[in-house]
Length: 175
Image (tube, rainbow, N blue to C red; front, side, top):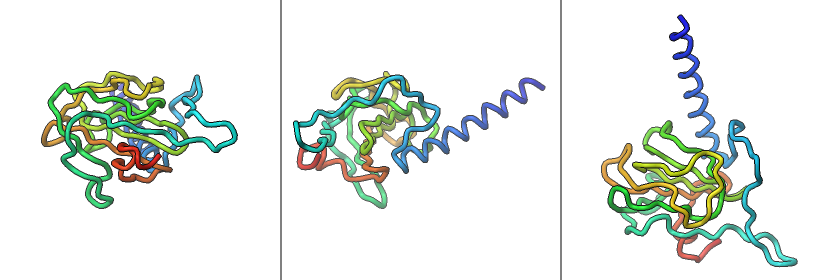
């Protein structure tokens, strides 16, 4: 009887986690289960100016094999070999590590500030934990093919909860 009750509770928690993750990606909000013991890293700003938005770098060195398309692809796919490094595109806090979202495989989500989130999907190994503070260019995962048809990194950039084309942000045209 206890085993059956534990299974049902575990199943319910997983369902709640998936619902919370869907809200996180959709609304750019940190789930309440993540405690903040330290604030998010601050983006530097000049005296007398408004805060600068995060500057992003490419999370993996491979070529882009799928471009952003608001209908079919909410991000870009970057080709590579199994085990290639995946790095944080900007400073931030890890708000999710897991594989509960179907179609994303092993995934990491980083919140960079109150505006931007990045998601890194299809990894074979995750090197960070939820609530870790990460630095831009820090290795956070290894590329893989979890829940994918080939080895690749699926990378998404979300601004105020909405998926946007990451390419202009990665090449420095936008901030």
